[in-house]
Length: 186
Image (cartoon, rainbow, N blue to C red; front, side, top):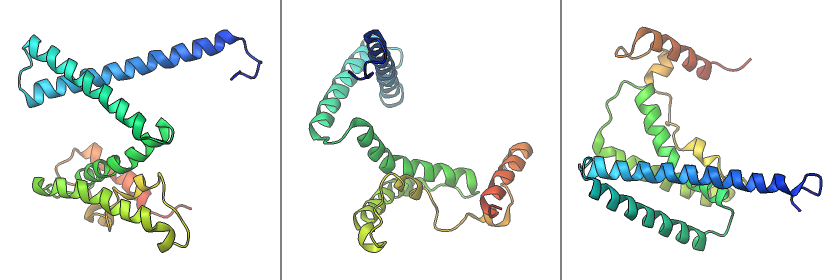
């Protein structure tokens, strides 16, 4: 027994029920978000009920197929697979977000897909060769931290000045955060 005989069986039942409830809630939210995003942003048909219901069923089927394929291909735990996937996908997102927040430069839209694809590819090469290149050290989930890092600090971090477009209170708060990143810990 999972509780080691220290707790009554009803505790385990409530735990499983709680897990199922939270999983259904998260899955339902994801399904609703996918349906709304696809219907409104891609099809531009937010008011048509029949289209929304059809898209909802299609997204549910796609989600079911994804789960079945994921289960068939995955040899580790679901959490481990999610962390691995997140370490490859969140890096470019965080990097682009940091670029937008920490620099005054305008993002060139045509380069965003290149950066979003190149960052995980470089990290895959780094992960596959890290043991050979770094004396036996093997990268794992910490790749998430490497992907968004720029090769050198942006201009306003080096000079501790904020962009002129931002409000004064946000700029002063951001400079405080940035200066705590730049200054060595004592």
